[in-house]
Image (cartoon, rainbow, N blue to C red):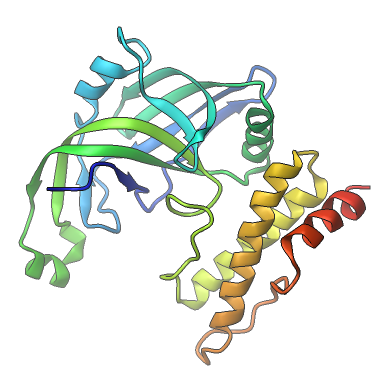
Length: 248
């Protein structure tokens, strides 16, 4: 039996399409079609039709949520539209006026949040090729997913489902540069934003983990040196530094 709930980021960044910070309206894609993800799965057009019809925003029992980082305790807003187009699963959401909602809009507007992921259960899938062949030819994928039960779509402050999970698979020099750029973007946001202390704490913890990951990679001679914030500073001290000094 498969997992009750799967979490999937398609690997190419199902993205924000537009944001209206005044009205609090955000549109984007929770998932893309016909892309081989890191699990070897390919989400096919039509996979979301039934679940949208039964529990989407225009159904008799709307149940699909828009969350931050797959956390049910962090709802972002109310889904106004959820539909498939040629690209993937498109959404429009009215972001709430609560602190997290306001902070989310600031992060989207600054470019800090660009990726999405979905929480779902697979209903129907078919094997594209045996696993032995998939290992040799991953570009063709392993499974095609033709139907899912969707529970939520999440906007991500990091890569993958959990923003506090250390990165373990990004090893190339280009990826190290990407991680360093991400860390600098977080620091810039924290310096210039009036986001809540809770949001800054979450981002600074992620920044610390990125810094530690870069420092660990520096021990590998094939990875070039990249400047990163030293991770030895405690989170509480970092928060005080950002909130009391950098935002003056």
